[in-house]
Length: 248
Image 1 (cartoon, rainbow, N blue to C red):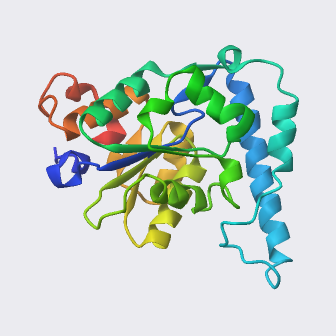
Image 2: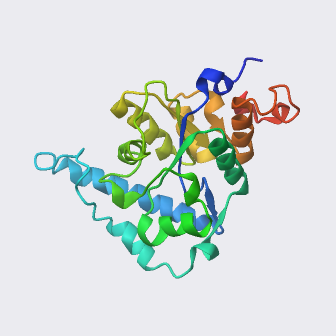
């Protein structure tokens, strides 16, 4: 059995960015998340269609244009429940955040959801904000994932310059997260390693021909990989013997 490439010392991350919904927090009613992701995808497709007719007048890479976000704002206007009633934080991922923070890793959160009236409330309510040096939401950029803008903005907002020897991971649960990380790598000229969390992101990872070691089927898989990467227990530990097949 070959060594997991994520476990090499040279591959220990110095920066890890996380998606929010479906990654750090889970919707109590999974159908709500599915609906939100579907509407977000529709918004993205619509935005691409409009952009084709405005290429002559619009600079698509300019970060200063304020997006209208009609679909996103409509969703939040009809929301009647508090974040506590809608969501629950993932305890395993909180443990991962604690570990990474203790190891000196710089952390950020990148979400296609609105920050005002939702994302910032989620971070505050579940005491997650303290972990992150940057938090980028949909209204902070002109284009959401799978465009690279939000990931690039998060990297530029960490409070320190990027270094050539930085090892960057981006963890997300959707195929669009994989695409955004790969696209952001091209923009910054430095590798961003996508980590697929769950089946939907795994599909994107397979389509992008990523290493199986970058596919995590559960938060527990990701936690074990982080623990192994920082040598917090040996690779032959009984815990590591139970990793799901795509990570071997």
